[in-house]
Image 1 (cartoon, helix red, strand yellow):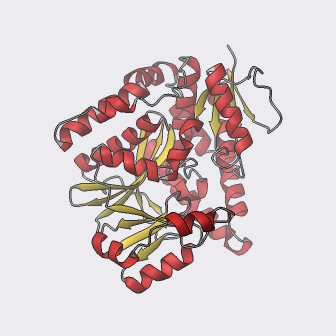
Image 2 (cartoon, rainbow, N blue to C red):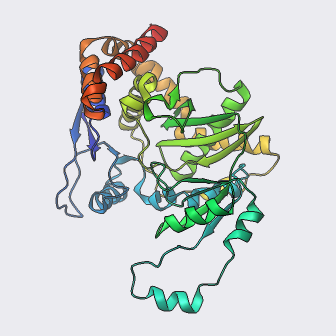
Image 3 (tube, rainbow, N blue to C red):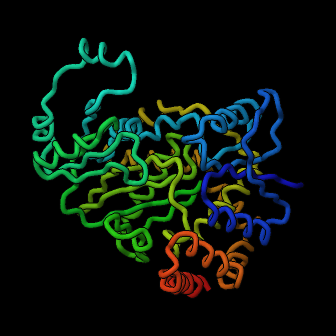
Length: 395
């Protein structure tokens, strides 16, 4: 039986080419097609079994098409378009605070500059209450972080250590709606976990470094217990909001895990940033796509939040209950059994591909598209070394 997978894309090229190549090599019963944007009838029948979306979080026409094919035709989507509003961070913070996670204290403050709306002046003059920004910051406690409530690519993020930096950051925020969040000062590790379906990769992340150096190859930067908690938090967030292709950022201080960003409609999977971890991401994406297509997994539009809110007990007991709810949603046991029976050949296929000339051409194309000409040789050698390490570790 033939299956058709749709890729709804923006400007990305490296990982879609990789995904298509792995599918061609390992899954001949599958075809992959890049979705075009065109008029659609609300009763039109879609041709796709699964659609991987990397566009509709900002492009509304394809978003409405995704809603239609999920609601009317049961096409499986990565991710759900029905909770994109939650991907503006704010709702995600609220949900995870209610579930008892150690989210730092956070306050949402009004816009610094008036909105471009004819009704704003009247509404603001009558109903906007004057507030003391300094008093809010003092109550939260310095240092703190000011960041847009909708986030994305570290836009508008400022570390605020005193009143001068507070007012400078707020003045520069303009029409961005901002959170003030308590900084986790002196944290021990910054973990970024990329989740694709029932799998999660936790990576040692260094946001202060250039993109090619932000993910360091370190398999033991967290204790096993803390690492498992980081995985559980990522899975919980994704199951709660029906996100199946998402990244979660947590700060670890001692044995405490503080989630600070876990709502990414378009998580980073670029070859030039993930490097060593890129083959894992492609394998996980192929496996979850095939699992969803062949098991007839249906999209879940409703969130069933009450079953999460009903969980009680200590922090450890609640985490264990949340992990079970998440594993039930992702059908984790069934997924691993399916991969062992149906996709046992995938590891070898991806290893041969990464070690061969086709992947090397992909790597060179990604570098030349990302870096200026005088840096091509340097970065080609840099990424070849990291991918050679992956080949060695997985041989």
